[in-house]
Amino acid sequence: MSLLSKIIAGDDKREARMHILKRQHGLFVATCFVVGFIVGTGIFFLPGRVLYEVDGHVTFGVMAWVIGGLMIAPCVYMFSRFAGQYEKMHGFVDYAEAIVGKGYGYLAGWFFAVMYQPAGYAIIAWITSGFTATLVGMVPGQEVYLPFRFFISAFFMAMTFVMNYLAPKVPVKFNVATTIARMIPLVLMGTVGVVIGLMMHGGGADAAAVATGEGIPSGGRDGIALFAAISATAFAFNGWQAALAFNSEVRDSKRNFPIALTLGFGLVIGVYVLYFIGVSNASPESTALMMQGGGANFAQGTRHAFAHIFGRAGGWLVIFMILSGLGILNACCLGMSRAMYALARRNTGPMHPRMVELDATTNVPNNSMVMAVGIGFAWLFVVFANTMGWFGGFAFSLPDFYNFSFFGLLVPIFVCYAAKEKSLPVGKRFVFPLLAAGGAGFMFTTYWLGSWLHAAVYSGLFLLLGVLGLFFHRFKNSG
Image (tube, rainbow, N blue to C red; front, side, top):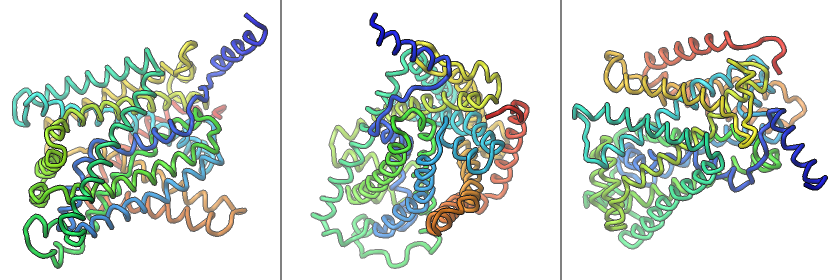
């Protein structure tokens, strides 16, 4: 071995001993992380709900998608700014720590490690198991339906864990491949549907007119309908925050990661709008199904639209949804493996001397991954218990819980940034941070407007788990 090779090998070993993850991702992979975390399986059926909420007005529907995206855009823009200023390990923790303080940074890291990422891991597995049950011919109400979904969810979680643990390079490639695969049908349906709409009615009629043979509806259901549609679309742009876990693994991250955030988010807005227009124009029959309302009709209308446009290939939509779900599940496992590690890098959190260790061969925080997956299985049991009705009449929504908590955590970060950055011009110091705080505040408020009881329960659970996290926080020598 040459002297240079020995030096390089020695540097690699020292880097592993220092518990520092390698910078191995370029701009393209970072952008795929952002897009892949946002574009979930739910987007395929969401246009039906939006179309229903706006009473078939495609124009209003497009407005809802654009406004929903623009409400989240200031948050993404601010985090792209943060990414260019702060970097240590796990972007969300970095930014919360640098802007608000170490205690708040720990709370943010604990939230991602215990509530957000493992819970998302469980819920994606549960959703994917639902498509699997449909594929094998099971329907809700059968005695074995829910136990089957629980077993399949656990199997999917274990499978992605094994892949991430034993072959950590494969999950990154798998994430890139499945992200591209999810975008292809959205773009194809959007493009073909737009062309059909222009050919059939010159782009001048709305979906309800096509479905009923009547003129464009004159009033919609009421003014609240557009608000409901905007709320639905805004949540469809959620997920980008999970990509923050990889900020310190991106080459030249202070340049590339802000680009990846803004480019990926902008791409998603464009594709979502295109797909919505395409599905709305696919066929009168599919539109009529969606306009009846209800999750089953939204799904059936979407499947009919794909079958109408792509023939027999459209019938493969369920299989495609399963593969897409596995792609997102893999990305969740990849991201959440960094959460406890990020706390341990700051010399805090449970078993931090073990959580900070990296595998000498793969440079992956395997101990942190094992703990995250264990927490994920605990959340899967909560999902199963809720579906079985073990919580009585209270319907606990795991996605609502962690999204509600996330947007609540964002507001102090933006407000403190505006208060601290006194050297910035007015626009960068006040306008954009306060717009971002307003967007996050809106998302947080929608839960209280929707159900104060659920919002109160979610707040109580967050506080309970937050107090639990204090037992593992080292108030001294953490940094």
